[in-house]
Image 1 (cartoon, rainbow, N blue to C red):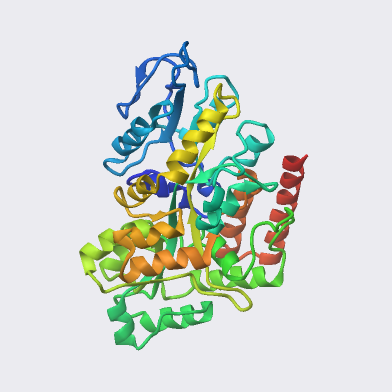
Image 2: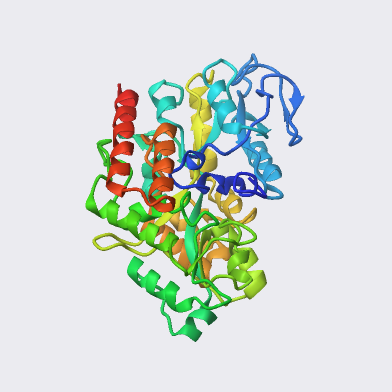
Length: 443
């Protein structure tokens, strides 16, 4: 989980925007009104062919497949995916570039006969799409490459032992810091949350704050990282509620402590998704996204480092990762042909996967074996970040964590962190909603 605001600036990174809140559920992409069913041109300039999805001509001609993407902000991305489609030998693949509310329109199209054959979706299809029989089972499509994909993201796109999407590219959130400020203060990169707090305090001066977690003080962004750092999750492997524990109370309490401290920056000109607070010297540490690294390099060269979010007692360091997944419409007239195209593009064509991850913006290939081939990830903080995503990566949310759950979680974070409400009582409210939602989803 988009180009110059949290929703608008981040392009494919938008699915990482707000962690466990409703806006961060992978539902921030966009779509226009064209379904790809009749001859027309989207605002992105892509022409869709006439005829129904998956149609094929008489006489054994190649099938026609409609493929949808949300509107990426990085220059050249649209031309790249159109080039990939044109290179596919076994079907006539027509790309539709979808501006606007992509997630909502795509989900609605799957309820009709006008949906695409192949489409991307933030963190893979929703549980409602899967339970509703709207997406095809892709189990076995990865073959021997299964173990090569980022395990956290692949797990997020798996349900009931079956694979429902193929990861396209990895994006992540990470903690970055100014090396020169650390050296001057005699501070080392923190390994634990307590060390983070100690470092932030030591780094704070009359002109510099020690830590920046967003202009809301981390209310909308840091709930998931704090959970993961405590060794917890939204839900457990069976769908049971995952954080009605003293460890969660302590984790959210630490975030409340940061919120009320004097070392936390809460008034930057731009929010967490832009690294200018770090590069301009307003803060010594900032939680942000991998996509900011090119701008950081431009502004302060090698005066920065990148580390995972530190661990709570009994927990472990964590990195929030997410990815758009390539899915197949179960109502497609050519499901097997659509599956074959997804396999060709996102499993077999490693050169195109590497191109998509590194030539348009700053991202990590979904497959570990491609990371050493990514020139942008071979040194410095970028190399450290890519390694952290593989070792400490944690999917942005559970597939059973519905938008209603996410809204309740966001309300909880506001009440605990901003308003100082009792964490145990607030967690209990979320638990009641989450358990009802899981029961509804699982039937």
